[in-house]
Image (cartoon, rainbow, N blue to C red; front, side, top):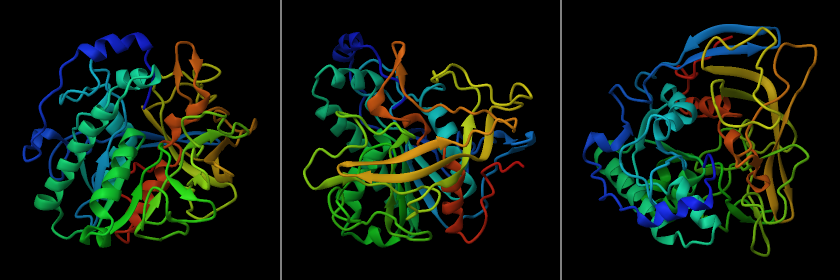
Length: 383
């Protein structure tokens, strides 16, 4: 979910029609499919941002014959009128989300990303104004479920797979895992699910139970058959009372957290990050000056160790605490973004929602690539 809209958008939401259900046997209903030119196979120009300034610039490439598949569900990005999006993905919406958050995974796995009638940004505003969004949520999930069924029937052919989503996409994959994978033969082929940006609940001190009946939270490097989940908040800014993310609302439960760089770690771990240096989203403190050397030479930047993260569980609160390792002696920025801004303010209950994927993206791609027994070829790893 990227930006909250004003509650006035509710009027447009109520008036808009709903698109018919997609036919996932048609390639046009997929943003990403293996073996074709699409948003996941487009090279991403990426420059290393090191302590001594800008380094080399590389381009992401698609892995040749990876052993693993990735089934990807994007977050809430649609500005379409209505509670649900249409099936025409926008360049600055669904396609931009895939580019920034998920396309690098093509260097580690075959990518499958369905277009679905996602709940829109207007639906988020409507929910905030008290509207019932159950029907549009069911509609969105129905599409994701239909795409999954098509993937299993036509593309999977017994291959291991990873589920990847963010925000609404993670919510959809929570439902898919709980309803269509747990207890079924497909569960044996699940390597792990990467589903940050939406609360996953577990009993205090437990790794399973709550949201999932039999799928545990990943708690050690190299573990498979588990879930990687977190919601991000800036260091020293714990989820406040009433926060949308990071607080369990049921007695005995907390929000699960996996450190995305090193599952099971309890201390600070440096992250391998990828940032969209041309993002126009608001940032606390104003636009970021990425380096004292001047403007970035490419759209995307890679930073290693600029950011660190650790999981914290404090009663019902569970979240990934993120800090910038500010060093006045190096040339890199001392600030990163991630907060959700709207109407001139930032939403404290959302934390650093927009950094959930970008902050540990290099670590996530590496872990998927490790399933193939080799380094990622598509993460654009400049030095």
